Image (tube, rainbow, N blue to C red):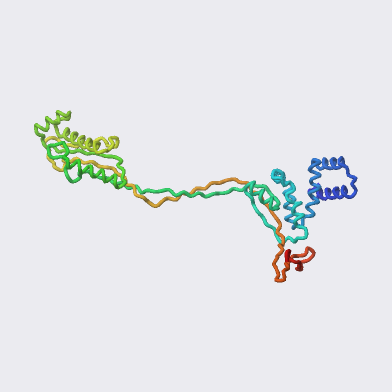
Length: 334
């Protein structure tokens, strides 16, 4: 038996019960069992069938509401919110003597919004799910990083010939460079020291000084002494020892004189941070939310305005035809 045939049968049975009052509860229970329904569901279906006929909606809208009332999800949600008949009785009473001019549809994404629309007289037509995609933007500060190698004493010798002690002016110059790094928002990452000597023979006093400090009394020992002197000076000026690499020692064999080979330098690996345009980062999220579809009829509204005579005129449509009737009546208090 098709759904429409079952509905027609329900209408006949409902009519029989109303007109003859001979159908007893036991007979209804047998019919319900034959249809695979409980007595309560069958009785409710009989009542709703009659109510659907009283709704003066278009066929497609009426069918949508009928199908919704057969949906267990819709029935459960309506029962939960205290509107088990889906506002059918309410709209039947509300629409008496009024003309439907259209329909309004809404989608609620929460139980709170659904309950609000039901209180306004909407019919729930389906219970579904929607995927809501949200785009999030975040602005973060940005900086440009510039590598800036700096060489100490690239053009001038820091150590006098035959000496391995730094002069006060040399220490002052190194301090000035380190201070400028801090003021320019730069970061010192690493220090590399290169100490080189040629093969010019050392004086007796220089050999004794190197030996007393634990260095070998030759040009190799002199290169080591100068490298360690510069390293200690940098540490005393605040440079972290962990970022100072092992010094590179260069020297010529004894007797080979080459002034271009006489130097001690320190290479500072520096990065400079400069403010840049902020970066805008976007991300998306997906949320699954309820989607309650609703519908409500729109009726022709009466228009009221006052006349100079103290009467009020109401324009309205008679349910039997479309002509405009005018009713005049005195305004209270006039």
